[in-house]
Amino acid sequence: MLEKVILPSNVEKAGKLFDNAEKIVIVTHVSPDGDAIGSSLGLLHFLETQGKNVHVVVPNAFPDFLRWMPGAKDIVRYDRYTDFANQLIAEADLICCLDFNVLSRIDAVARPVEAAGCKKLMVDHHLYPGDFCDVIISHPQISSTSELVFRLICRLGYFEDITLEGAQCIYTGMMTDTGGFTYNSNDRQIYFIISELISKGIDKDEIYRKVFNTYSEGRLRLMGYVLYEKMQVYPQFRSALICLTKAEQSKFHYVKGDTEGFVNIPLQMKGVCFSAFLREDTEKPMVKVSLRSVGAFPCNQVAAEFFNGGGHLNASGGEFYGTMDEAIEVFKRALIHYEEKLLKN
Ligand code: 5GP
Ligand code: MN
Image (cartoon, rainbow, N blue to C red):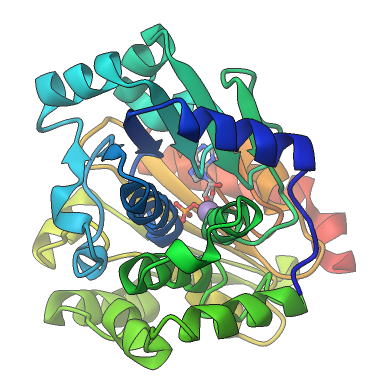
């Protein structure tokens, strides 16, 4: 049996929002990951069984290894189909904000969403939810938004209406936000939910292969290159850093998603509990920062204090507006600032 995580009053309010809406738009964060796409499509498949007219709008591209997901080909990219997306948002009866806590996380989509007069529902697991939705279902202790979508559907009494396609999407989000159930995944209810999803017919081993074992040659060679040539280890700080310039990205024919997960690799080293990956962005003049930690070390504090970002205790990120060299200097300063916590961890 699932414990009741979502407040009964919020389940009721979300149910009313769904009941009263015909046209529903689901939005999720910039550079959507498996949980962003998984939770959005998981909710879409459910709402479609209820006869709703549903669209998922994302700010920009999502990685190739998520393209197989049922419904992914109909996702509307805001950066490509801006007018169409604006129209969908303006005409929506309900906007569901999934896997993000503040409007700045949806970049240019924030403006039309903020301007829309319709009701808004947040389903998310990031700390400090902003105040831009009518109903806020925010549970940072839950390891994925996809799990929250599953819980919400069940609490509304519609477990039977979860289709195979919906179950595949929900499972993908739960799997990717826990690194294939290797972190944030000690809650035994996760495995109860997986069992329920398997009852819908999902092939979890196949989903794992589709997401994690579909690397391009370029990605694998890039991985080899960054580990051999670029990884800096700071044993005195129990930390490691990998950075990647624009020139290096073009040398390895980088496409979005190719560096996904690189930040986790240095944590496989004994003694390393904090890892950073810095990548010169190809779209904006900034360095994209990804941070990961193990144990109690709060990499989200580092993201907030040094890199205009935030996130979870063990997985966070941000943006640095400056050169790569400056970003590296800031990272080193952060190590010194956090030395005590790093060594205590
Ligand atoms: P990733 O390293 O996979 O890009 O991001 C990991 C987590 O860090 C995300 O799930 C999100 O919570 C957080 N995060 C990443 N980039 C940003 C950012 O620019 N700003 C904020 N506030 N959080 C971010
Ligand atoms: Mn998530």
